[in-house]
Length: 371
Image (cartoon, rainbow, N blue to C red; front, side, top):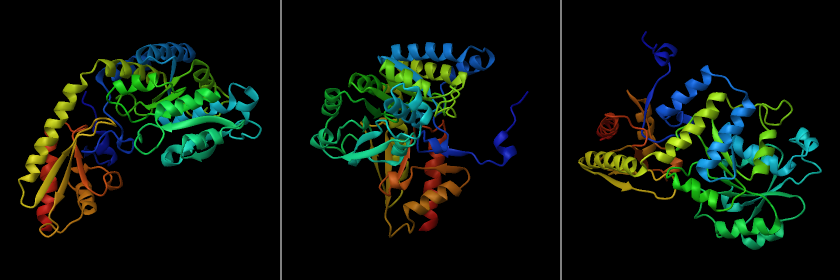
């Protein structure tokens, strides 16, 4: 029996993804092995506590972490980890969240690392304390300090290095959490971050790890992982009761980590690089169009091309091009301009066979129409 075309039936428009595994676009394509594991868990039931414990042990073994748990995404991992650091297992305090009066509820964060998702820290009732230097951190730590926080994908935005930040946390006996959600691949980043000494680390499951879209990981100290778990589903009174993780997501995340550990990342990187280079050559063949291949090495190691054109020849802007690609047939999505300094970026991470030429043809057509 043929699979129905659900999108067509619903009037939902599919698109070609020339950006990457963004949450707003449905994340990454799951490994086939992950889909098989999820199907198994759907058809074969186990007690949630048993599955949670077994999967956590396996993921900890794979990553080198002391303990691990599957969460409802990286944001959930931040919320539950923060709740753990504020309550430290005190049932009365856990029952009161997000009322944090009478408990340590201050989280120290570098001013340069304030970002959209730091609201996840504040969600269970934490108060953010901004600092700019190691001296500021020491001065800010007091009896109300529950946690220190570090955003890993902005390593160049701070004057304090990770080892010094972690050392201060250890010196004062304050837990330190790291948001490393989008720093994989390369998978080596995961193990090196674990080895850096953070007490808690969160990862997105549906992007670089190619696991279930709505899942994530929280790695770290066994006591904090256990308390984070108690603050989450399926515990009836927990603040994070609504943050459910399905059995198939537990198993799917475990298999995603296993597969990611075995995957030939270098071959995949070279495959993507060859595609974006070819896209660049295709576009640069047009008069007044120039492309530059970028190969970032810090976050996700995702090669891409940056496209420029002569504004005198082609009277259109990157914003207009982005919208025209989205409105075209087929619809094509490119990187948000606020993330690309206003330039058109094209990646090959999510492109299927034959789609690269469709993307460049669409872009050339838009430019020519504006000439």
